[in-house]
Image 1: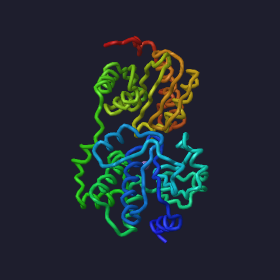
Image 2 (image 1 turned 60 degrees about the vertical axis):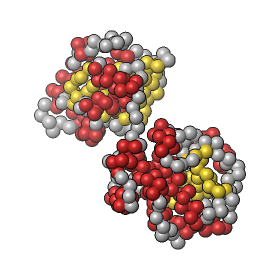
Image 3 (image 1 turned 45 degrees about the vertical axis):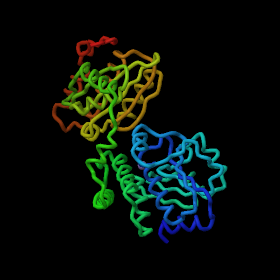
Image 4 (image 1 turned 90 degrees about the vertical axis):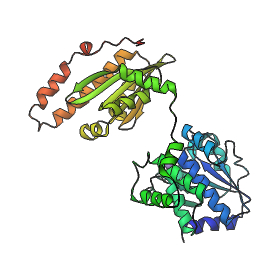
Length: 365
Ligand SMILES: [Mn+2]
């Protein structure tokens, strides 16, 4: 039996008056759009069931633009107790919905999960039906598949929603796979204007963020370590945007520090090439030890990480550079195929920090 038929069967057996379509915390476009399209699909087959999209843990910034331009209604305080069937969308663990997780665990309503993340056994255990496809680049792809199984087509708004969900989750199709692009192709053939839709839902950048990015670049110290370009800077807000801007401009790795409420925060970013060639995982190799050094916390992913703790900007960036140099030196030592690698490694340790830096922490340039 196809997933769609299984879904309908659950609705037929439990005959609910109210079905809650639940999105994960800080719900994004993919979660909300997949819920919206599913809501339309269910309406066609079960017109008497009341369905509602619930976002009990709020929605993110891009999703707010979505609600402005699309006929989508979400309830920020959904009534979980009165739901007779609950569908989790784009959510692999109900613990992600911390404040309402207990209510959900207590609810006797049959639960269905529609998701593209790796399944969480604790959550799948309590679900009557799990429609999970880890290969899908966006949850909207799975909902599109349900339309296909139901032998019906999404209407214009549903198609637009599916398109937006896919566009956002795949970073404008950069992370799309062949199945994703086939679905996108069909949505476009059905009348979705790619350029117009993407422009309509582009996230506007605040003036303060623009200024922060420009200041980060203006204040950047640029260093070269064995051919890798490392950019270090500081700004009082939007450190992550600043760190990304430095990578976009050409740095292989960047670290941007800033003070907030007496604490120091550092955002780290790297280019794909740097990560692949050096094998340095910013989260594990740099952010974690830097967090410890600052008596705070650090972590994240290979190409994007963050740290917060107690310290001053200049010594912290120096420490960050030291960690990067040690890692790069280790890699050079490990790959002795390069004739000069040992000499280079030794040279790296000799770089005098103080000559490279002349940050003044209250740089107001
Ligand atoms: Mn998603």
